[in-house]
Length: 239
Image (cartoon, rainbow, N blue to C red; front, side):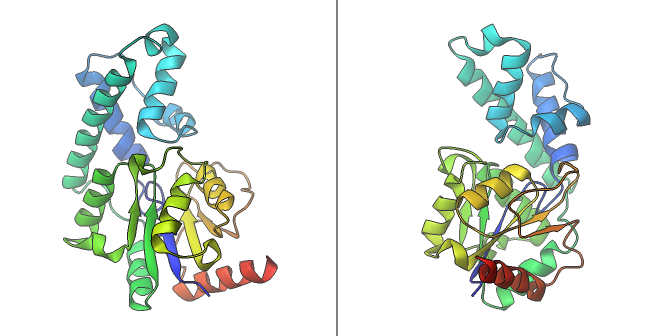
């Protein structure tokens, strides 16, 4: 029986990447006097690296490997990421980013039917809380029994660590949950934790088949909780 939904955030709850995170990274780089500018095409490539600090480090290693390996590089990355987060939170506060169609309805439907809900994401807790408050109102975090975000897990997706962390706190078996992800790394992380997972394609999801997901959807606007239950039931029957 389906007992819980586990949501990714960026690209899944909201299309945050291109007009939110990417712009915030560029503002942080400009503020620091760095000549780095990530356009949409480059950012789509960099999304293969999970985690903001990890993304900065991967880019730095590409353009200046000696500086990226120098003492103090980690501190520079941490400061850049802190400023990037501040710029992103400002964008949220302006209302620049909203939930994807169908997300709010499903969140409320699941809550009304007594399902537990959780978040499993690599983005920072501040980003998660602000997005929920801006789009759903004060107290929106109470919709979720567990919020797994940022560095609570040692390894980022596609490693399953964040899912293990969330499952332990939900006190549920992986088979009792259904994950909703927009990225191949997210699907891989859920699969590695043995959580059935639905892929909901976003702007940056690669246009090719995704292995491991129990269903592949263009969005959630036409999806009901009843359909998610059916997907989960079929996945368990096939297991």
